[in-house]
Image (tube, rainbow, N blue to C red; front, side, top):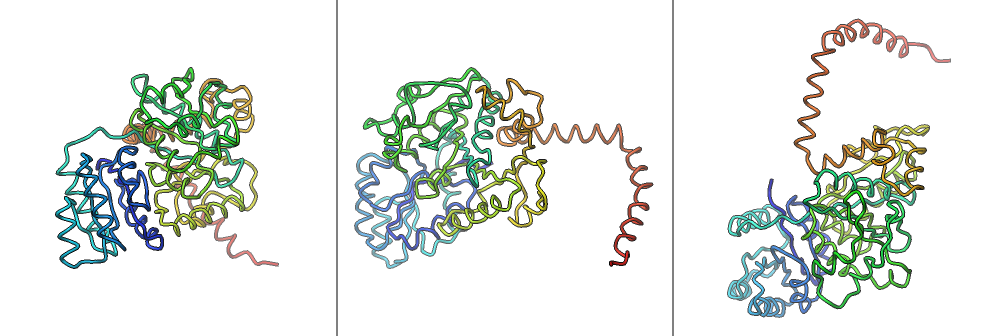
Length: 421
């Protein structure tokens, strides 16, 4: 599996930005750690966000951007730079190469050329520590259950990775988030304390803000007040999440709840983006609208996976296969409806694994966690179970199917040919 490459994207061309984002995020290994539209912000961004490469759109003022990046390198920041421009005259290319840029790519950006450039970069750079996996869980509407899924998913991941690694759950619903309530944890510090600090974030500062749950999971709460929530910017949020990825094996975020540039920055950086929906027309329509809007903004919709929650509840006229047809995508996971267990878990402030460890919903969320953390092990276990089932019931099952098939077909034939009144 190709290692993750985090990039800082600079472009002052707002009209061209969506196409550029879509090209970059079409490559599985690329993550956009930060996006800038002002070249003077590049030095600060490089110190704030861990990045493997800068992709810089030189247009419309190549000389200004080249000079800023040249000063960046002279200041000791040795992050490789890929230049991107529609201007291919010798002077621009020569100045970029003299400034120490690694690659010069021509607009419109060709994805294959970018992929080859990234491959050369990976081969030339020594192996570095992989950042922790960033997992976003967002809802198609309020009340679909994304907080419940995010919280219990984080608990299961913490159990899977064990005590030697950290898993953190971050509440990105800055106004009405309930992550801390679902786990019944309390603490003095919140995400606002990290987002509004004037100091450079360091591990000790971050650990001070985290609350450790008795499951081993770490929690970063929402702000205490709406006023604090208003002060959090997209850059603040991205900085906190990237810092957490340096410390933890998995960072699960409940959100984003908005699809502005701040929310999209989380999706751009995430390894898994889960969109939770239900078997309701309104939920499916919202899902389709959200995906279409993100696509217009330049986000690659293939990076969104769908989770259908509360499957099994009475839902006339809408089934899972119909939802997959409407969205033109297979669901990544389904979670059964068990309102009694889930509501009880929420009300007592305990994850499902504590009170309902053998329950179906808990087992399905555990399965989801394994698909993220150890998919090969999960596939091997499922293949083993399937093989054992075949050995135990194969012959009997085959004969039953053979005997039942003619009757079934006959019934279908009668159904089709039955005259309608």
